[in-house]
Image (cartoon, rainbow, N blue to C red; front, side, top):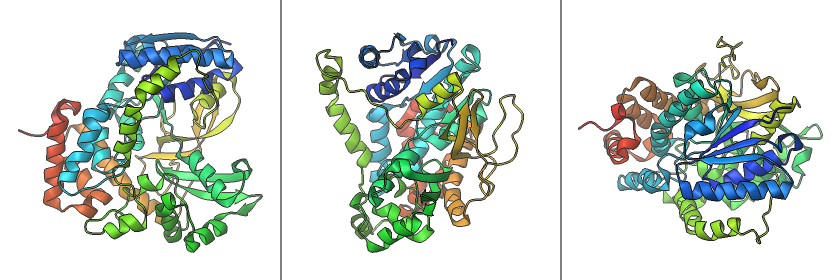
Length: 450
């Protein structure tokens, strides 16, 4: 068995890289993998390289590990490309995405998936991913690209339009994390629960959630109606009451995908549903503040290094494609998938969502790669809610593909949360201001007009 060549793009995300490396190298069949670490931050790259060797020692693996600031060198001949970059970083990009909207009265929690923050993140991220994909077309055209970067749906969709030759699957952990949370709420071991989930990233719903053949929805609904739900999860349990199904992404995320919880002049809703405004900046500040202590700990050979399997799908996909062991994972792919030979697929995966959008569905993985499951129709109220998000994604991707700046404004105008807080003049002015503030992080043809 040939050792797989795995390129990790954005490997300076040391903790996430450590977790993925632990997952990969814990498989005996992958212990001799050729690991290529790439980042533009030399200091963080050096730390991850040292951590990679420590992880290998901890699990008894003997990989080949290299670190480089040359993306081409990392990609050359790769079989798998794991992407975990953040274009613009916390400073200046994320700060801009939060602070400028505040000047207009627009408040956010995470701002990386949808909303004005998600739109701006897509505008600065998709072009970088497309540029990387063009490198892949030259250097490793048959590699599987596993994208962990948000905004997931817009990134997957944008790459399908701009670089259809490269096989991309978007990977998230919201499906498996939420299943664990609900199992804990119900007092049932998660491994005993059977579920089927489908939708769009961060707005997929459990179409089936069962224990020993019995639906758990009556118990979840009883919990929702009682009001005795975890205080950090009030938004999602409220949506369960209204829709009849439970959504995969966290309450803080979900609160800004809809117009119901963060509204101008309604701070009572913020308190009632415990919406943590500015949550993502707080996390970033905490992580940045603790980086130096963490770096010292990770590099200290005398400090125990804990390596345990995470719930991420990346290593499972690699293992299944290398060994042929079949597995089911949840992946983000295009709703009308294109075959590996470039021909059209066999109909839509979710029949009552648009042909051209990114969906999150169960996928079989084996030596043949990622094989998405056809779901058919989902409940119409779920499809209708998803469509409000798909509209924003579609217009943002259209702006990126065509270079038509007007579609950025159209995306912001149709965003559920943005339109719940701002009027049209404010939306137009905010969008112009953000494009100007982001400057060269945005493609030149989409930058603010002089």
